[in-house]
Length: 555
Image 1 (tube, rainbow, N blue to C red):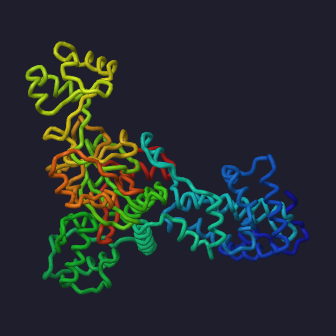
Image 2 (cartoon, rainbow, N blue to C red):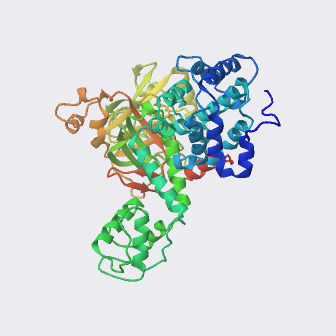
């Protein structure tokens, strides 16, 4: 590169201005970049194209997307994007305040751009300016990638996770930037386009404002408070609920009135407690959780949403494995919600997204050989007719064969497994009281990685575990209520789903096009009423993600 400036130059470079006053950085940049005249911009663009065509390596931030960057600058839309443009200042500001987008400001180096610009002055060559232009583009694309596809890949946390690959089209990002009125307008159309994400982002910015003003008001532990009482704790409670946006104002009134009782009920709902108008120690503890933890929950939730490509977010059955719940989302809006339990949650580390292809009423269960050895083999040896009467049947290479085709009478389980593998045996059980899949099951594109089935009722202790079902299985309670959202409308049973299920025969219905099943953990989400709901992190999923985002080893 040519010498940035001569000793006799009358124009102070940006580096000098930054040393004098860092706050002048934005103004200095605006002045300096205005030196790029329209005529010089054409020369800069030609030099950008020339640099991209050379075999020499460019800075890594540019090199890793070199082909796409070159495609943009050599297209009809190709132009100088940053120099002599307000968006250059906006990008630096966005990098410095990335936390408002649920990202980490420390992941973006505005100083690199500042130092690059500081090498320029009115005599800098188009080649020098082109080099800085490419640095801006590279760092912008990194920011755009993180905003839309996430900072980390889910497979960093879950090596066995199945998530559709989510990345950005750099040419598309740059083209959208050109057509946007500013960087803020670009972010509005580029970030995940669903209502859940927007609500989480809005609440995040609300909490960040509270943190800047000192954080949540700490509430002193107190006895149970309820409507009609009064006391010195009430004004502080009003102030704390006002911070959560559950009251429109925070007065010093010591009387616990009906309006405050309603806000308390909303707070209990928001923090996952039984709904009532009482202030209990459990509610006080929830309200006193530090604001940094609540912000961590929100930013992690936004990161997990980014893992899904936008085109997969239109129709979604989202299962939150940490809260034993599901929501059915349409364009980010919650349509239905209910309970869903992971099978054996201590070993169920499922995190994935896959297409729902169909729903089968009264599905057939392929019996695992572990079940055969521990449960069925003793019954076969005692009363084979009873086993056959229960509905179990055997196939060899796809053809029905009698159960005694297996050498179960005298052989060990290992012998039976060897024979089954050699002869291609498979054991099945149609719909029955012994079939653990219940009244229906989903057929999924990656069905070997996930199994969704009917669970008759929620387990009393909140834990469900069937060792003979896959560790990637989830039982959906009262899931018949959402099947009208799952099944393709044109083939919905005329007399209703419950009537069709009551016929007891096995039948499969195709699912709606573009419908995804997503399994993840969220310790904060949006409920059907639009209320932000904070939950728990029983399996330390947030801790794992936070560690990955900060570059620390997983806990």
